[in-house]
Image (cartoon, rainbow over all chains, first blue to last red; front, side):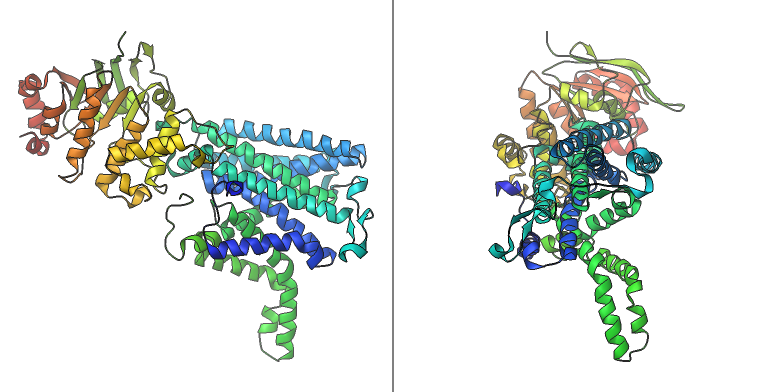
Length: 361
Length: 257
């Protein structure tokens, strides 16, 4: 159990669901052929890690940050600019990583030390301001970032779809560079989630929870809470930037819409809340539910709408029209918050009752 | 040189109201000082000034020969000032054991260890459990702090301070709101701490029988000023206390008699 840092899912149903999700993600290239399934699976991996890092802030320390997509974007742009400028080689990948990650961490450190000593609302406002400024900066510095168009780039030879690693006759599926990239994303995300699970269950992680519960008391115990919150902010930023790197490698592109926009920030918030705050596992569940709904709800509704139309039912074909999918996603979200206020994980762990000991024993 | 805690002309103003007014007093180890006075006399405010939750408007605080007037609350705690709060001040959704373990962890200097799971630190867990046994909360260790009765929460509050292993213990009405049969547990605990002659113990308390049985010295605060200081029998008998304490706050007079 040490790989889970002594914090297992603690619910049979939850364990089963998690194992199914992980197995499905691990076997996607073999189970679900086609580019769309693989894209959805890769996005779930990246967002599971990204959402888990946001959970470290929101769920464990109780701080609301709006700058999470900024760190995600820093990772994305760092790798994109490096590969675009230096050409498709491994030195460029390394350069992207060693510039992107420290940049994200330093920025998080600065924001944290500057604004985490005061009221939480001030921190939220500062992150909002910095993230907006960064978004404007990214679109203005078009010589570097490609502006609104973003930057497309080519991957090193090994990771390209044309590179055949194992021919088709072995597994029935051709293992090419694309699939290798997918497994890179999968393994990277899994590693980050396990690392976050370790952080939240460490003595340091317990202090974060103490700060969330009663910051005044944590200080009276002698903890310098500003530093704890700032370090948590840095770790979250590092993971977000790493997730950004994986996302850019997968998309072979970094642009404002895929990495910086506030709609991604909203998606992250929704995923944390749907999955369950302060659990880390919630991030995996939330990301899976949300992204699957985002990608398949529309086509599902198309089918349903057509069926209703052919059956001659009134009103329903219109309501179920694929263009209304956002309405249904919204309703799904409201329903999930209403029925599972502690998220799916909270519901599965503690049943219908009130949240009890939190993630303790 | 023995440990000392001293306040010199300590003052705090809230607008025009002077809550603590020029209080000078020295506390020595091996001596339990009870701080008494009517409600609103400034006892808790005086505690908040010493432990750092409030910053003084004037005067200074010296601890172990060092001026700590400008030090933050966490710094003072790390220097050895322990505080149990009057209004119970815990981590509500964490378990009882976790509450104490956090204090043990703070005392052991384990602040930023993020690479190991907490259960690897068996030393911290064992220490937390032994403190819970001391305050008779051993059987409740898995319960969340909010689920405890008021009396048990008060005991947990005291347990957090003991876990910090401070040089100065500051009890702010530790038995307030406790049922009769719970009070002796806390009193026994304070008496035990007293036996270690190297500690300074400060106690804000309304119950005069408690004060009589435990205190070596009583100081009286009235309207933010120090009005009496001396051995219990002498202070209780002094006219100024009779007038200030009994005259102004008739309600507390019942517990005095």
